[in-house]
Each structure stands twice: as C-alpha cells, then as structure tokens.
Image (cartoon, rainbow, N blue to C red; front, side, top):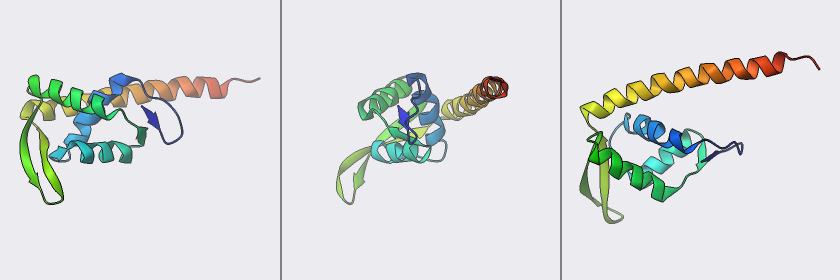
Amino acid sequence: MTDASGASLPRQFLRPLLTIALSTGASYGYELTDRLHQLGLQMIDTPAIYRMLRTMEHERVVESWWEASESGPRRRVYELTSAGFGAARRHAQDLSEVRDLLDEAVGIVMDLKG
C-alpha cells in the first residue's frame, strides 16, 4: 500500500485499517476502498481487501449480507461484530503505540548533528 506522498505501508496495516474503517459503519468493498483512501492510502490492492474481509468473516470479526444497489448489481455489505469492535479498539491502541515509537525514532534522527 502506498499513501499520497508515495510512502509505502507494510501489508500488515491492511487488517487494522480495514477494521477501523468498518468501525464507522457497515460498508461494501468499493466504499471501504474509498474510506481507506480518505485515511491517506492511495494504492490499495482491491483483491487483498476482499480476501481480508473473507478471512475476517470466517473469524467472526465481521458479518456480511447481500444488498440491492440502486445503480448496479447487488453488493456484499460488511459490518463489524461485537468482537470486531473490540478488535478495532485494540488495533487503534496498537497503531497509537507504533506511531509513538516511530515519532521517537524520527526524533532521534532529526536531532542528530551533522
């Protein structure tokens, strides 16, 4: 995944960010991709999103159903389960800790003289 600045994020960020994106409400694949874009992720492997959603459904983190669309074919809608909301909170905490670690590491480099 690559954000708008061209910085690449490791694949392990897809699951936490998908879970967090779903914490704002039920959604379908295209809309989830748009939500991830709003988080700053521009280059997203769409098939990877659907594979992750299927895995998360198998683990009962999300549930899904088919819904009619006014502008095209039916679409599968995904929603967090209660376990999924717990996972979203844990992912947010984990990402906060990673952010703090990265801020510290960047600060060390930026403070170097030379």
